[in-house]
Amino acid sequence: MNDQSATLRLAVFPRPGLLVDALLAFGGAAFVGLAAQISHKLGFTPVPITGQTFAVLLVGAAYGPALGVTSMLIYLVLGVVGVPWYAEQRHGWDVFSGASGGYIVGFVLAAAVTGWLSERGWDKRFSSSIASMLTGSVVIYFCGAVWLHHELGVSWATTLVDGVYPFVPGDLVKLYLAAAALPAAWKLVRRVRS
Image 1 (cartoon, helix red, strand yellow):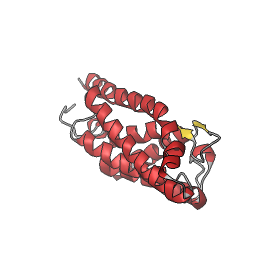
Image 2 (cartoon, one colour):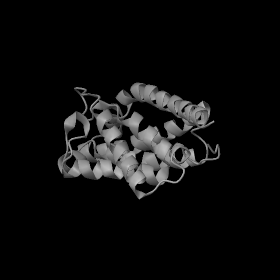
Image 3 (cartoon, one colour):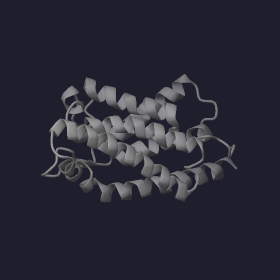
Image 4 (cartoon, one colour):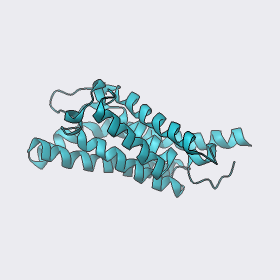
């Protein structure tokens, strides 16, 4: 294995073709869709707690920006047109244009950011991987909070209480798990390839 591979995907598939990239992109979208089904609805906010952020951060970091964004766009578009893989097996334009839509847009941008950071080696060590995952999480929160603020027409304080604060503890756990998974995956790939 070339330790200089830009992303984990390129370390595992050094010469990917269109078919491999398509399978990986759809696989990444399906992984996020499965993680979305790990869902818990809170009584005071229209946004559920899900496993999506964990999956989005992993896919973006492992795939790199181009394939990570492609994967999240597939997730977004197929969810809008009818694949029931948004949280709680929901789908459709009304879900995307509703309170959760900003988080879904944030997934696309977070995949780009974490993928870009991974291309620069941020996924190879736990400390820098944490910084990458935290950055991706902030992107998701920013997009989600701005969208939720506009959708609900409430104050910023209420937006933060409904759309950010309840999610921070769980997302810290998810980003630490994702941050630990990437360097561990790199070690595994190196061991298999040596």
